[in-house]
Image (cartoon, rainbow, N blue to C red; front, top):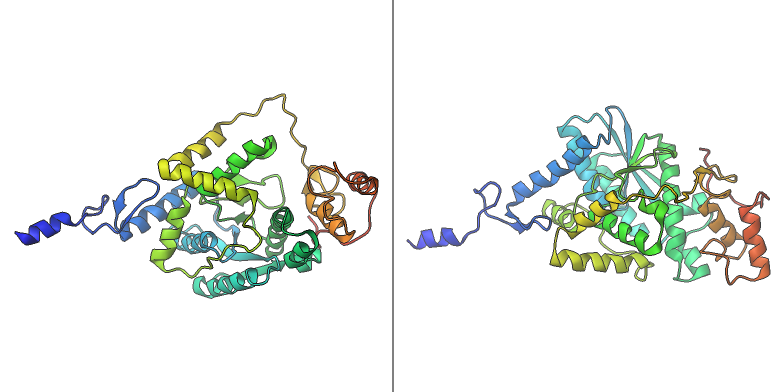
Length: 353
């Protein structure tokens, strides 16, 4: 009799109704066992890949690898799905060394272990090699304010340049549902119509050098953490030492508050972003090529070249925001950069596109 009462107190898995529930899924609030969690987590990602036709057999795919939970889980799951479902992909790990002492050097050690654990070739590109600057040097020059602007612009281009070196067909990143919901909010707050119209796309950059895919578009960050924890994956969990005051952090906290009240809020924000329609009268930036380095740009110079020129000339604020508040000499430099006159100096990369 006592045994029956004990059994009644044990909550069984909502899905299989056989094994003991070990966790509550953040996305659905269902209490399920580990085995069923692994299965539904991996199957949902597989269905996203299949339904959106992210890959074709024989393609070379670079996985943006930082050593953090998202990219580590992505590398592990994509390797598993590639074998299980015979995607026929050649997978590579691609990392960017921004030059942040005590952060990136440690996380890259994790990526190097992942290279051996998953049997995936690793390529590392660095800011120092591409741009002549490390983030430590940039922060010493500009301070903590706006440093994320430099890092974001440089990292995006560095990934494309690394992907070009690997001669891959696509680049996949570990951007999850929380990241995309945050980006929708940020673009609304900034009034950035151009980015708002594409930030929810699961594949971007088809008109650029390397298309980018987000297999984790509908995957919750909390579930990625749970998967990494229960699978005992080897990942680096320290936040960037330069990002505590990043604008995105405020959007992240707001999203987490919404999720606590209503877990589906994350997917609803993504759906809202997908449903936005840009007015036909809205003037969108035209895609072109940077006259200096050949990278995609809607201006004569790409953002990376403008930022780099400012650093090299001792005027790091040149590429941040508008030129309002700069003195006449600074305005002249901005005008010169955005015009046709060429300024000699190190370009923002050494590869041709």
